[in-house]
Length: 96
Image: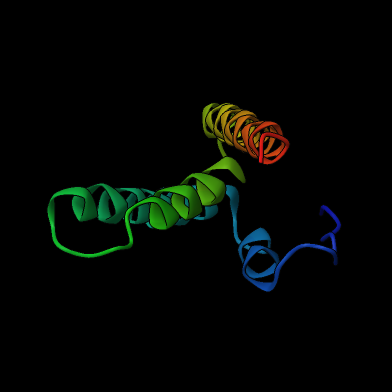
């Protein structure tokens, strides 16, 4: 039996005690539901579009390698955008 990492959030501790097929099914359904809800929010009125998609991707990344790669790619792009905005602000503040 594998040892449970106590540093993980509580929901992941609960899921890690389940048999692998059950855990993967639950993670797939919950993560997929979050992603679909976020994508539906694009066309439906409401402000919550990106957070459910990111939460679903993070949940799926706990079990699936492809989701982990997508999550890493999204994190890299978000960091690049943040760095671009920060550098523009720094460059723009010196002109005043």
